[in-house]
Length: 453
Image 1 (spheres, rainbow, N blue to C red):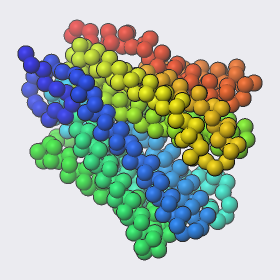
Image 2: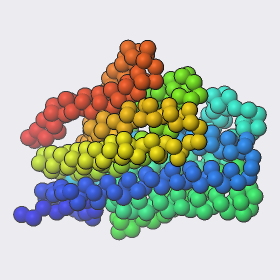
Image 3: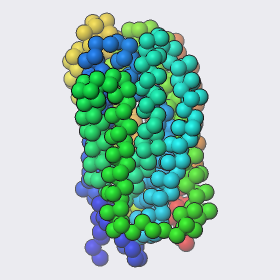
Image 4: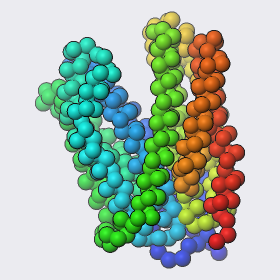
């Protein structure tokens, strides 16, 4: 029997068939998602450049701080994307057309509820932001102007998370790329128009994001409706099915805790670097910028694992699950080897182009070997994250992330006398621990998931 390819397959009803997972399947998901991730830093660069043209350092600082605030705030709701991918992929694997639509509706409703909660709590959140920022009065004023406008994008931004997750889960990563790129492109265009054309300043940059996210929500709704043949009607009992709601809430809770632990790990790294002095802080920032580019590619392969393994788990096709796991790791490690080679060969030149401060560049070059090994150390961590999300093993992913965080902090404490070298080593151990712990736990989870009915 010929096996249908998993990636990009149109939602269908009827009994399940064996699933085919190929190199093409992996790349058809990973490449669009990587490109989607790469559009986000471009948006930040353009916004910074546009505000920078005003010649007001306080305005630039306020927008930069505001962007960081919303990145952290919305990152905490990443479960709206990740959880939706796994649930939608499993519905696709089961050929459950009704649940496929229900996952979308539930996820969007939950996203809107979270967004409305942020609007209701915007004043206490804003107060906390200003207390933690500790900025000068001028920067604080610019931050207030930016925050006060952009917070109104919260419901739309989170709804877009849910839609992007659903599109990815059903294998429509080309649609997800088009939606994400469209939102960012519109945001860039409106930012230039509002700030430089209409002289709306910091508030204009925030308004650009609000309008772009609103347009993205509308476009996403039309895209999903078209993919579903405009069959969006669902019985209330299906949407609010108690068992499905409990499953969704538990999944999102676990992913949120896992994300908080991950955020804590990287925040701790940044804080320890700052305590080591301005030169070390700047050097680590340069290295992190280089590493971030490789992370976008690893995220792309992780997304492929989410969709392919999720569909295989939904279809109870252990062979397809194993093939997806193997191919994602092969492509991940292949890319990581290339990234390591690039870092060692071109890293010093890239760092020299990124900064004109000789002391900072020299410091960054000294720690370049640690940063160069991060993509290689992180392949399994990112790949297994995707696998666990697709298979809905969220509780184990949460627990293993917390265990890896404890190993990370313990390693840092033991290597603290070695300064920044000890900090980078601890980060490498953290990534390795995540991958190893999940690999060791996986055989038991596979037996549980694919045991005979």
